[in-house]
Length: 192
Image (tube, rainbow, N blue to C red; front, top):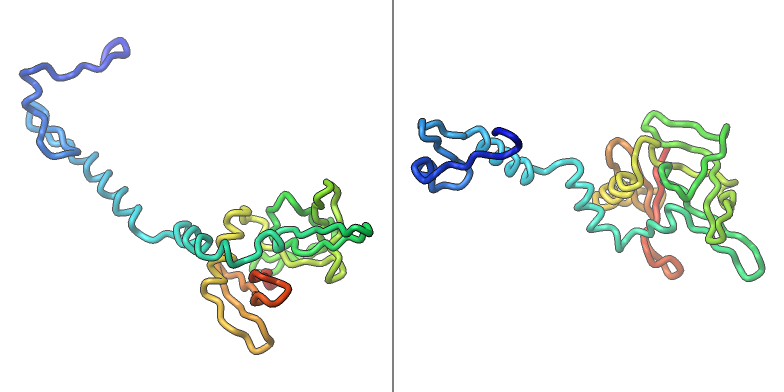
């Protein structure tokens, strides 16, 4: 390569092109197998299951079944001005604020603390149930990962004697409640 241009083989050199894709045989007989092998490894890697592909698959399966909107931040302001603020279970959500000094982090990374949730009017409101306390996914998880991990736990859920269902993903247990007459989708939260 000279002066920013690439030298292409002339007619006498083109005989070195192999008929199979991904290989170039130079006039000297060298085979550029390294690139072919790398492409093969990439292709095999794309077929192998990975943690992230499993989360994506679980989320695709659960996204219409789990009430992620409620779980993230569900703030309703009634006609009388009364506020209902529920949810607040994803630590990385931009729709919540952890009240400083109230948080405790468990061994599995799950946070227990008071939260303020962003309302439709742009104001933040202290969660109105559980004395404002919520359990939140580990702070190190992005919102996408938190939803994926919750989905994975939901896909693998099982009934528990106390009622409801439980599932585990990446060392975090999640408690789930099935839909009912007033609640059309599954709801859940991480367990500290």
